[in-house]
Length: 112
Image: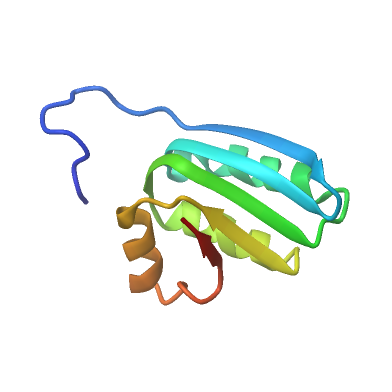
């Protein structure tokens, strides 16, 4: 796994926010920090809240997401099964590479 900052010593926290009224037919979820096993349940709950109104598109703003493991990938895949389209907004090169290596780059719409 790649280090974000040498000798940072501080563990990044995971946070999530949902805006399910952003625009008709769409919902927006902001993810930041580290999306791993510890934050996956919170992320799943946010997805469930966001898709409750039945949006066609679910956008994840991942501008501040620094790390994602297989638990985070599972959250995104589950979200893709609940809506017509999943958009990842501003993924870092590390997140983009992870999706490419996992063979998922074509599953999501990438906005940079």
